[in-house]
Amino acid sequence: MSDEELRAAVRRFFDEVWNKGNVGETEEFLAPEFVSHNTLDVQIVGPIEYGGAVTNYRAAFPDFHTTLEDVLVDGDRVVVRGTDRGTHRGAFMGVPASGRQVTTTWIEIFRMENGKATEGWLESDPATLRNQLVTEPG
Figure 1: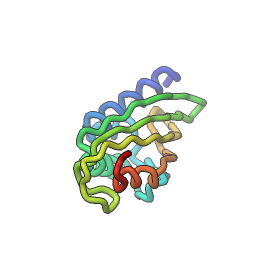
Figure 2 (figure 1 turned 90 degrees about the horizontal axis):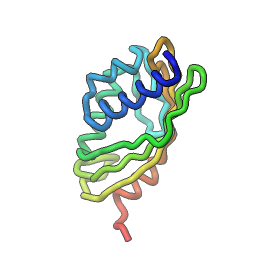
Figure 3 (figure 1 turned 135 degrees about the horizontal axis):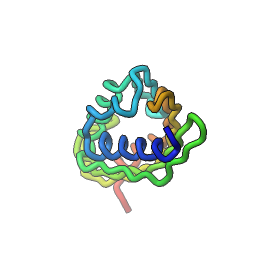
């Protein structure tokens, strides 16, 4: 895949899977042996577990939307920087629905093989997210 094709595949993945909730599309981008190394302490191996994690997240934030700020390609690595926004409508991180708007930022690096991601390293700030769930704005 060319760099442009990889960028397009990543953008499609986040739009279809995360923004639209089409978790069946995980297999288009993630290899069967995909492993997520993440700061959320969530074990994710393979497209099905990844799709389950997305479903759980979207249950807590049904209006969830991610905006990709940067998509960079360097050899077999694709680096994505994004901003997530949503309203806390379901239990998440042990916190019952609060109705609060949250905004979080993250960076994920995917290792690609044969056009599919085999590993991902997600750097996010779960403490800041949790704080937005339990702290009154203002």
